[in-house]
Every structure is written in structure tokens, then in C-alpha cells.
Image 1 (cartoon, rainbow, N blue to C red):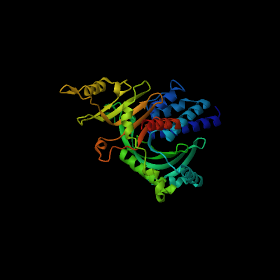
Image 2: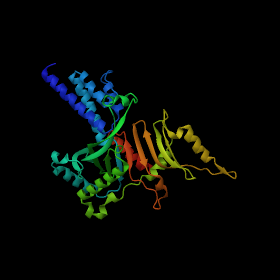
Image 3: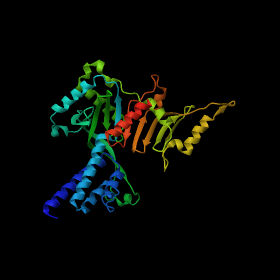
Image 4: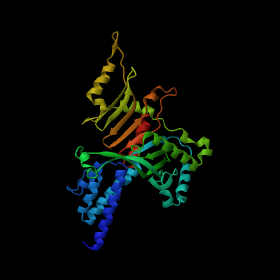
Length: 368
């Protein structure tokens, strides 16, 4: 291998290593990258992201490295754009074309300043990328913001005292890190729908996620001039997703989807939490849950069957044919709210394209 080829190979390895660092920071699935590496060589396995980085030194074929780099980069980029999002939907946005024009102007006029944008804990969201998803009818406007996050990471046993590493096969710790997050506004011109996607939904604590979502909405209102256009303030009326919780549970059992987690109450008011374990694919088919629900339905008082049932208030459902999970996380207190039960956000895990986001959107709209 010539010096130039060696230099190129080292560059590609460095690019791959950087992408893997991003994947680990964003708590992306290690298994996903293990599968990618194994697809390029049976000996390219590792228990941690750092193990996979070390395996790069064993790949000398530049073409092979470049194909691996393309696959890794594409996976990370798709995750940044579409995965691990906190989704809010706004319907019947009557001034959708005006919003498009204003967003186009914002992104067209913006001049990036990396030095300023790299500062930590800035409250400003910076325009990053405008993407035509579908023939100028569906457009994504992506913003970036550096946030301070607390993330869970596995510790390297070689960095631990022997008294600790000898006792435990795996040790995890929490550390505070600065990470660039990517939030998006997606507009659907034909259907007059606007979607807000807040990044790293699983990583962020729920209270912080709500604050970021609120800050981003206020930022968008200010940038679009909606603060002085009350009649067009669609951001005050997000789509209520609470009815979807019961309908997720009531959907017919099939082979391509399943309830993976559920919180519910019984008629007596007792609260329960069940999470899928083992090889099962749907809580509704697990014996413990099924027999409990049937027991409620067959409850009798003075010979009269009451036909009781459960009331779910938080549910996660996975669509195995797409590897997408949708979580609707309301609370027990919401059931007794005097103003009614409401939920305005959904968690989306596993989406890798706008088609996946659209699948989730259509599912929620249909179930309402």
C-alpha cells in the first residue's frame, strides 16, 4: 500500500471512529453497529463501541473501509434526522404556505458562525439544513442546539480497580456531556399539517424535554412572527393524542405489531404496570395479562356479569415489520383531571426515514 493510500485509509478510519463516537453519545443501539461490522467481516465483532473502533485497524482494503464508512455515516445521519424524536402534530394550519416562505427566508439568509454556535447552554436554535422530502410539498427544516446532557455509559473494566472489575462483568456510570441536538419543523403543504420533532427523546429527562419543546415552540413563534398574529397561532392547539392510547390497546392482535409496555387502572382504581419480557411480542397475549383481563370481564355481583375492563393511560406499541416503536406516555393523574385527559406528544423510536415518520403520523391520525 502506498503512503497516499495509507493516508487515505487512516482518514476513513478516523471518520468512522468519529461517527461511532456520535452514535455512542446519542445512545444509539450498539447491536445495530455490531451487525453492520459483521456484514463486512465475521471477525469484526466487539462488545462495545470502542471495541469496534479498534477493529478498524484490521481493515486494510480502502474500498472496503469506504463502504463501511458510508454505511455507518448513513445510519448515524438517518438517526439524527428521524429517530428518537418527541413528536407534536398541528393540523389545519391555514397559513402553511406563508410559514413555508418565512422558513425558507430564515434558512436562505442565515450565515453560520461555528465559533458562536459551539458555545454551551445557548438558548438559541440555529438553522442547519433545509430538506425537500417530497417535491416541495413536504419540507424539513432542521435546527441545532448544543445541550448539556447526562448520559449513561458502560465503563471500561481496565479503567477500574481490580476489586471492582473482579466482582462485576459490566459497570455503568453517568456523566455530563455537551452534545449537539437536532430539532426539526416538518411542513406538509397539501394536508396543512406541521410537525415538530425534538431530538433525543429517550435520553432527555421528561421534565427537560418538556422545557425544550416549549422553548423551541416559542422560538418558532417568534421567528415566524406568530407572537403578533394570534389568529394564526396554531402552536397553541396541538393534536390531542390521548384517545390513541385506548385505541392502540384495542387494535386487533396481528403478527406485525404488539403492545410492549402498558400502564393501566382497573375499575377499582388500582394502577398496574406491565412490560414485555422474554420472547413474547405482545403483552395482550401474555397469559398473566390475558387471564387478568378475562377475570375482570367475568366478574359477577349477585349473578350479574359486570363485564369490567381496564383503562390504559400509558402505552408503547412496536410495529415489528418496520422496527418502529411509538410510546404515548400520559399519567395516572391525567385520568382524573377536571379538564379531561389530554396528551399532546408521542415518542418515536426506530424510525429511519420520513416514510417512517409519516407512517407514525398516519397511524395517530387514523386512530383518533
